[in-house]
Length: 127
Image 1 (tube, helix red, strand yellow):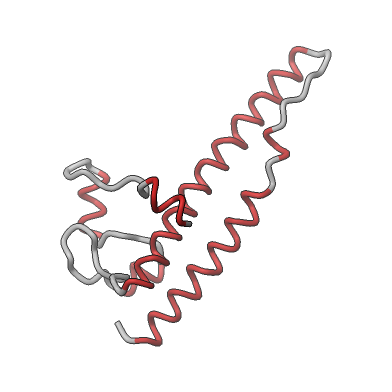
Image 2 (spheres, one colour):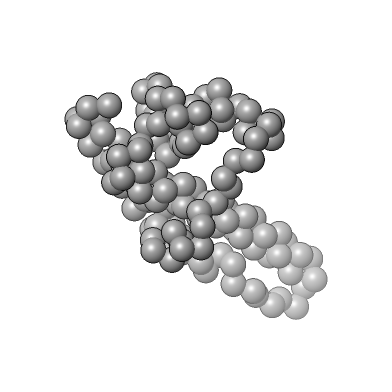
């Protein structure tokens, strides 16, 4: 991968990181509200659960983006973490934070090997 392509992916990842960071700062949707009506409370609880799931999904995606930026920095970006083959540019264009080639991702989705689901505690603290 040449320097121009690497800079393109780095810019894409940095933009996604900024977008996700902004979204994660908004947590007012998870506030617990009390209402005199039990049905309203059930509805608010459902909305709060949805907001929590969205925050969880976005924070997981943010960890993946930060890990990809780490791979850009250490020079391993664009290489599958499982088979060490180059990840195709078409896949990187679609999912720039991917850590696996399409073949290994499909195997990970079928649980054929232990995929690294998250960063280590030290990596999270460094970020």
